[in-house]
Image 1: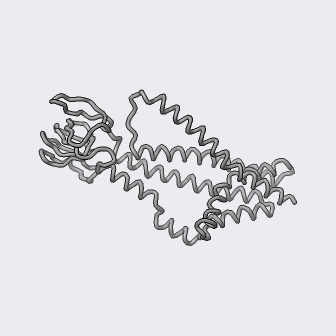
Image 2: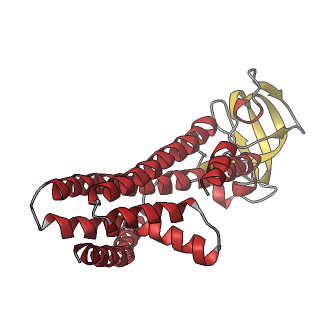
Image 3: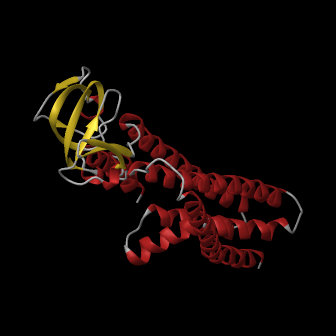
Length: 289
């Protein structure tokens, strides 16, 4: 009878999880919109796809840290409930375990009813439910804690890989010097069009892919080509966004900007590749399934 009541509490806790998540997500969206509105008139750096990806990963990492702390507390509570005579701690433990097991239950349901496959998520769900059914709430809480620890470590690894990309390519320039009737005009890179002429000098990062129409420069292309020595570039030669002029001054005819530049395409490919499971992880999952 006690186990039946406990399983009902687990169901209640798991059922409450998506509603709590929805409320928290709405609150975060409102906060994000307010922050965007407040900063829309300020001169902030332009966010690239990698910056946005890292921001999303950081938000997930914070959420996982919060979950990990809560599941750690739940495990401690479950141990006390199982080893002591404090009756009120037992139903509280069942509720919390159910709440933090929601993601596991959801993945198991997707695997069973949508994908129609026997996956490791079903095994995880079975372990949690069986340990609770036999009154081993500490073991169930430990299982949930282990799964959250694994998710947190995965988030940290993903964040590091994305951060390495930012370190390699550096921050994207937001402004460029557009040549209009032989006058230099400072404009945002996103407003540049094909065949516009931009001026880039020593120490500046080339903001676009294009062709030199006047001048010459030593350009550091290591981030793209791996060359250890700066390349000597002159008229009619190709230059690329994110590369840096070490010495010289050039006029560049714009060919590609933003997401169409070579650097952005490389970053996009690396970001997509980092989302795929590594071979060893895939083999491990197949064995577990």
